[in-house]
Image (cartoon, rainbow, N blue to C red; front, side):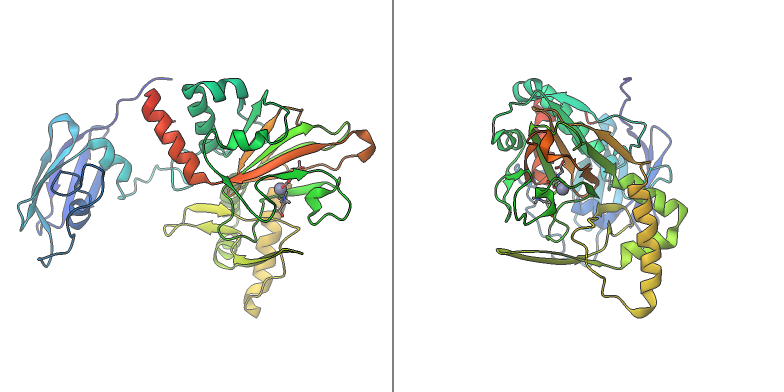
Length: 386
Ligand code: NM2
Ligand code: OGA
Ligand code: ZN
């Protein structure tokens, strides 16, 4: 991989009223920043404590804030002098670039991040080795970075001991305990409370759409494989949702706007949530998918919306189940796969009970903590972002 040099600021101009600074970058891009936003972002020592927390009142003692001077600073950043305070601050080029909000049109759509990579049936799952990721920070950072960017990874060579799934989650975070326990055994049992605990096939789904918030990560660890059947599938829900947006914008908007109801009931839980199948950030980026045929209920929507809703639901379901965004693989004992449960669907084929005692153990964890561990590992190992 060629290392690109990070863009620096080569010029800056202030609007007549001092309310906007336009910067020109070394790669030819330009971005505009509001004076209020820049004051908000000051990190000099009279603005932020060494621990990063703000120590001034953003709105105290003045009607507005404007910019008196803005010039490129040594090192490629931006030097700004504010009015009326004459407060001076230097902004780091990398920080300004990664936080710039004056959208450049070439940014690809993604999960609030231009770095995410979608995948299709032609790809394979990024595979890592347990021994490496458990013993070495650089290998662990690579694993977690693949997980962040692709939403699914396979870890091979894990111990086949029961409860290992918890130790593996603890390589980057904390287990998210639910009514299914700290961990759950996925095997066929009499009187299953959930169809996961049968030998039936499960269509690709996200787990626990009836929970708010849904668990961000699911780990599934194979202790014993099925002799015949039981293959796993993963589907890139982000890729499918972006395709839906491309081919049928109205269907996409309908599913992003109107919620579906999800429910799970057992002797010890009544979990109900109403949420759209496609969740968007305020600026329209996809931030989550909920899709689970076992737990979705009939929607409660205005009469005039219902037929459009089902038309969109059908199209999205065809994309998710159609195979174009799906990868199939078979777990062996000692394999573990992890999915971003807000992006990637997972499923399995049915298996024959006579063909061996298939046994997986699973648990949930949170995305924010995984991202935190990844950021710390990158700092420690000096590896650059993906
Ligand atoms: N289990 C495996 O979200 C779901 O209902 C899928 C979850 C039971 C924890 C199954
Ligand atoms: C689950 C699930 C898949 C499998 O437990 O949530 O989807 O392969 N299991 O058994
Ligand atoms: Zn599941």
